[in-house]
Amino acid sequence: MKKFYAFMLMAAVAVGAMAQFVSDGTGNVYTFNSLSQIEGTGVTLQDDGSYLVGANFTISEGDVLRLENNDVIKMANGVQITIDGDADFAPADTAVVTRDAEGSNPKGFWMLGENGNAVLKNVTFEYVGVVFGGLNSSLQADNCTFTLHNGKSSSSGALSFNASCDNNVVENCYFIENTVNAIGNGATNPVGIIIRNCLFWHNVTTNRNKPQINLTVGGAYDVLIADNQVIGGQFTMSGGIGLSNMMGLGHSGMNVIENNYIADNRYGITTIGSVDAYILNNTMIDNCYETNPNNGGSCVSIYDTSSSANIYMEGNWMEGGLWGITVPTGAPNINLGKVEDPQAEDYNPGNNTFVNNGNGGVLYDLFNNGTATIWAQGNTWNVIEQTEENIEEVIYHQVDDPSKGLVIFMPPHQDNTGVQEVEAAQQADGLYYNLMGQPTENPTGGIFIHNGKKILVK
Image 1: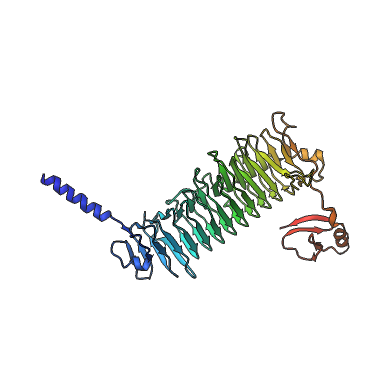
Image 2: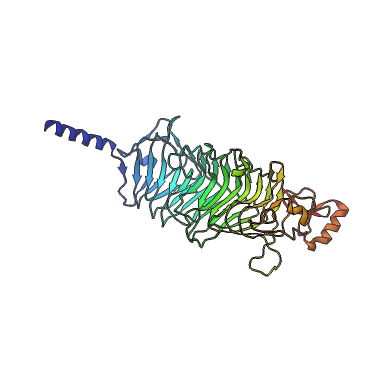
């Protein structure tokens, strides 16, 4: 009996030693300075002015955790900070959250409150990730850096979403050399999000089969990925941008990938499953680092065994891939250009450009291994003269294999006849003219008329 009581006493002591601080949820605002003055939080003020977080703690619903200006937070190995209330991480100038020592792998921040919103601004997260989720909450991130994330908080991303939520915005942020993808969510929890004007640089350093931006789409949630730079580290497994609906979720939202510069990835853009997406005015360069062309290396890959995807592509520049556009299987509805009736609902001027996409000494602008007809009019193909005979050489479709879908590619892109006077003027002076007829000697980017031809200046 004595041994039994002694055992119970030891167990009670052990449980007490493992107990963590949980705020009382009465509307308090906590800072790391105030937490360092509360016994049992595991937060201590260091001699250098930083705060060491040596134990897990929880901020309850109704309370707030705030980062103050110039805070430096160092998290110990395995430490997780759970925020069920609000995260006010918006210092006036800067704050840093990092690990406490080389070799430490903190689990980072878990912001899980259904009603808890998060504002992240001017913060550098180093070796530490953020997991967010809550049906009635949203995350706003601006001018933050996520770098060297260790993948311990989530394998879904340095910034990951583990529950469906809407009105999330990530802009002007930097995602640098994280071990997993930069932004992601689970296969069953689509989110509404805007990702805009961010730099994604050499993420997925573990070289796993993940894109740098990896989002499940579905439901009524809208996704906009626009004006970003997505630069790969020439890794053989990790890609650029991926949208997927592998669980066949119902969807009514709009998904747009627009005006991004995507380079040096295994592939540029991929959609998997029942995905509706507009892919507009993106520049994709040298997304070719797949070692086996049969497994990838496309500027754009549209994979749809459900035969229910709807993909609209206009104005994209695709260069240096092992393939231009591939449709590995299925019968998705793909509109790369449909110019016959400008008044039709599915009118698409095309204006996609293909440059030097191929492998094994063969050029592949468009490879239709699926069974659906693809409209691809109004585009500029990688041939010297845009004739039907020439274009046929860079497209694989029903003509090559009767079991495949047909690609309707004639007519190709035609110069705008409304710029004839501009063309005549520049033939005399050699200047570049924009499409409004305004001249310049040194164009910095866009479509211009030069020596009688429409060209894209990058």
